[in-house]
Amino acid sequence: MPEELTETRIAESLFGEAQKNWGWLLGLGVVSVILGTIGLGMTAALTLTSVLFFGILLAVGGAFQLVDAFKCKGWKGTLLHVLIGLVYLGTGIVMAADPLGAAVALTLLVGIAFVAVGVLRIGMALQHRGRQGWVWALIGGVVSIVLGVLVMSQWPVSGLWVLGLIIAVELIVNGWTYVFIGLAARRARAEGEAESPA
Image (cartoon, rainbow, N blue to C red; front, side, top):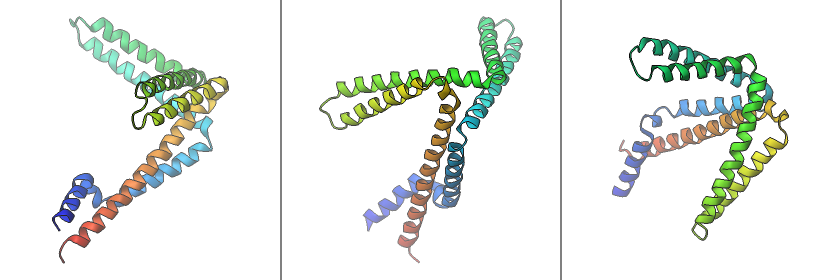
C-alpha cells in the first residue's frame, strides 16, 4: 500500500494540474499534428511564410534595439548596441524583402550544420566506443551527415522546401508528444481516483 501511495505522489509531482487538464494537452497535440500534416503538403509556402515572419521579427527587434540604444546616452556600449540593432534591422529587412533568397541561404547553412553535427556526433560516439549506447550516437551522426548531404545536393532547390519540412515535422513530433503526455496524465488521474477511498 505505501508503494502505491508513492506512485500516486510521483504521478502528482510529474503531472501536477495536467492531470485535471489532460484534455487540453490532448487537444493541443491533435491540433499540432493536424497543422504539421497540412504543412507537409505545403512545405514551400510554409518555408516562405516562416522566413518572412522571422525577417519581420528581426526587423522589429532591431528597430526597438536602436530606440533603446539612443535612450542609453553616456553608456560605453552604445555604439555596439547601435551596431547590433542595425544588423538585426538590416537582416530582417533583407529577409522580408526576399524571403526566397533568405530561405535558400538558410537552407545551405542548415545543410552545413547537419554535416558538422553529424561529424561531431560520430567523434563523440568513437570516444565512448565500447560503452552502452555508443552505437546510437554513431547512427545519429551518420543520419545527420546523410541529411546534410541530401540537403546540399539538392541546393538551391532545397531552399524551397527544407525549412518548411523541418517546421512541419517539428509540429507533428510536438503534437504526438503532447498527445502521449495528455494520455499519460489522464491515466495517472484515473489511477489516482481509483486508489483514493470513496
